[in-house]
Image (tube, rainbow, N blue to C red; front, side):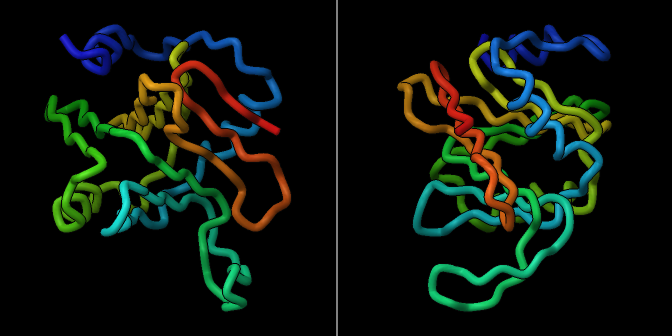
Length: 168
């Protein structure tokens, strides 16, 4: 049985996962709760997945261009799954998932609000949308797996791997 499958099978209702991450970091991660998914992109040339939440804000990018981006962002460099509760269906995404497959399977999440979050002891990030979970599973090699940040604000990024987190 896969690690993700065992985690899914062990979730019951409002059960909270324990993690030694600081309360400040947990409060920061909780800022995503109540916000909708505005967009989800897969970079065709890399393994990066980009998820925008919250409201649109205008920024000036590193090339000096003005852009509209989401106020909260999750960048994923790891495998992840969307677990649909009622249909008991799982959509899995990997570094090499084709962009078209990703776009078609992730579309139902656009506009849905995050109801709560959880962080496993291995720093897997769980987003609960009510009818489904989105789970970012950390790499087992100690490399960065995902990060969460406020796009237009000068705040720390929450960066996670299986054996460490950085919130500075």
